[in-house]
Length: 318
Image (cartoon, rainbow, N blue to C red; front, side, top):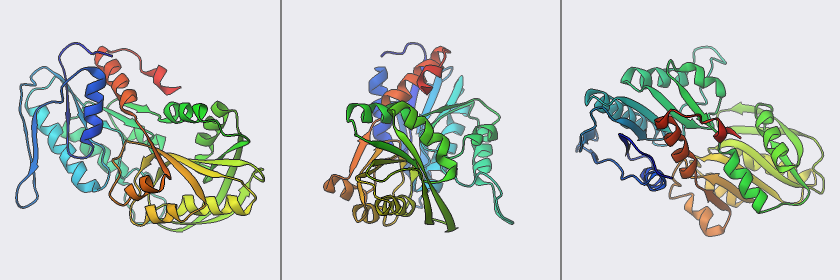
C-alpha cells in the first residue's frame, strides 16, 4: 500500500518499531525528530523537518511507563501544532489509564477523562486507537476517535491454526460481548467466568457459566496486566474439566510478575499484538514458547491511509 499527499508520521519512544513498521507498509520514511531527554529527565523534543500544512500522525501508545509516555505525546502534539501542521492525529495503539473510566466508589478520579482532556487541550484533532478498555471512552473526547479492533487479526490467526472443540471464554461479565463476537467468527461455543474483584490487580474466580468439560478453551480479553485474573480463570477452567486453555488479548502490559505467573499457569499459550513492546520480563515467555505476537502495523497503516484520504475506515471493524 502507498499513501500520497502531504502526510508525515512521527514517533515517540514508546513503540518506535511499530511506527517503523507502519511507515514501511505505507512506503514512507519515519519523520525526523529529536526524542531524547535532558540530564534531569525532562523530554527534549524538536522536529527535524518542515511540517507546515502537513497531515501529521504521532505514533505513541501510553503504555508503561505511562506517565512518561503520556507526557511525551502531549509535548509532541504541542510542537506540531506550533509548527503549523494542518492536522495532528494521536495514534495511540494502547490508551493508558483506560481502566479508570468511571467513578465507581467515593473519592476516586476518572483518569481516562482527564487524559482525554489533556490530549484535546494539547491540540490533537483526531485520535486513532485499538481496543479501548471501555468503549465509552470515545465519548470523553470532543474530537473524532477512530476505535479499531485487533479482533480481525486474532481471528485470522486462529482460523489458520484451527482448534477443535473450541469454546471462547469471557473472563468476566464485562467481556461477554467481546467473547461473543469472537465465538461467532470462530464458530465456537461460549462460556463466562463469574469473578469477584476484591482489590486492584487481584481477582477471585467464583464460577464458570457454560459447558467447558472436555473442551479446548480460548480466554478473550482486551489486556493483561499482572496476569492474576487470566491465570485464575485458566485454573478454574482446568478444574471444570477443560482440556487445553489458551488466551488472547490485544495489549500485553504484562507488568510485575506476569511472565512468571503465566509460565506457571495452566495456560498453554497466549496470543497478543505488538500494540505494546514486550518488556524484558515478558521475553521469558518467548523463551518458553508460551507467547505469540501478532502485528497491528498493517491495520494501523490502513486506517492512517483512510484517514488521510478521507475515506471510510469501517471495513477495518469486521
